Image (cartoon, rainbow, N blue to C red; front, top):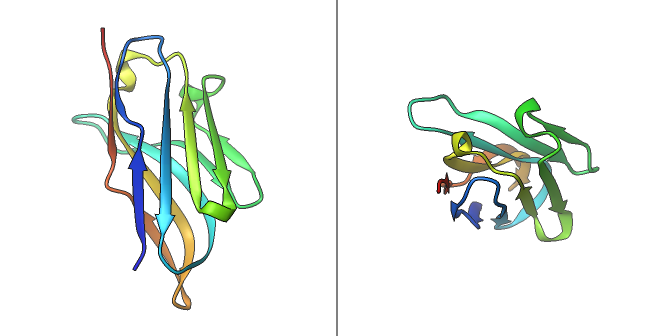
Length: 120
């Protein structure tokens, strides 16, 4: 069985920073892409950033220059360093693992989400 578990969310003031972590556990052979998405109340889930197993990154325009995604392939872990946070970035942040190979098949997995609240 595979699980994705996020951590690091919380309450932060505008302009502050948070670092999210997501660990994928289980008998995982490989994971091609790992990333972060977010969903604010009343809005659709949106891409924040992704990183492939070879280190290629992709960011939403809204977070470029402020957020940094990184990954430890050996630990099946992805991180998201978020700086200069804005109130409108309050959302549940979800971890995603794409083309995760487990038990001879490829899957797409989601974590349960971690709340990030940006407020003074």
